[in-house]
Length: 340
View 1: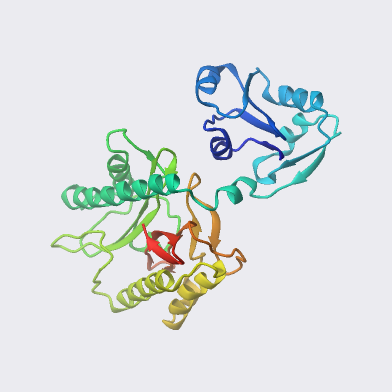
View 2 (view 1 turned 180 degrees about the vertical axis):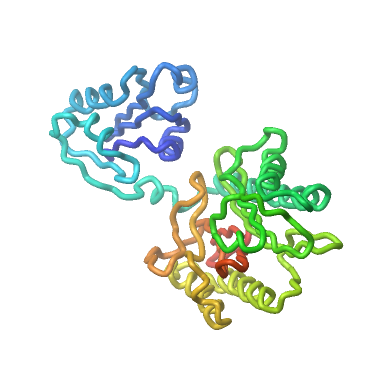
């Protein structure tokens, strides 16, 4: 194996440590973790399976290592590199570089039992946070702007600094929920609103990801999967999304191509008359990255295998009106999808 990596999660997976200024050079049986003096102590304590090299200019040092090792061919993931950094690593252009797209994600696509334990715990903690967020919104959120609701959600997710976030939570009310990755606005939460929450937390760097859409009734609300909306159109859309979510999970099988799982969900939404409003893929892998392989999309040829972890998150987004998404994470075990 000959590869040069710089993505933090790729580095962490390979040697147990990463930081925001480092390279991992692996040439056969030898490996070097190159970073600067700010990270020297932690790197020497935590890096496994590689020699720690400290340098003020990690690219110049990387180029020196490659030259000294007489490397003639080496792999790289194009998504990790920009032209400037790549040029610094091989200034004389003497190495034959082999592009290896998603090299690290392909190595990580089948999760170990230990990884599954960490992901399952992240999912559990994320679900508990959803319950706390619902209680906080019921007590304090009516009359509050999305921006402040997002702040309250983040407080509960972080749990007084004990947790890291998988990503900034998405809190969207009514028409703003029609944007799949909505940014919080000054829209105010009122009784009778539709409210979408998409959030996750990390456990030892492994992510969770969950979405619920709720009706904010005068007698309270929660982020349970069963919801009743007074609008017949919204209820029809919600029921279609839930049916698509449930069908994709129930019928997913190991050995099936990922695009087939996408089709299982998409067919339900199309049959309900909302096909044009399902504007993204049905799901994506989750692990060290919040979005990683496998991708559950209409074009994906990836064959699903046991111990792959991914989301199932069909949605309907009607511009200017409303958006609905229901998302859970699953692991493939014994040929079927198990909800985490």
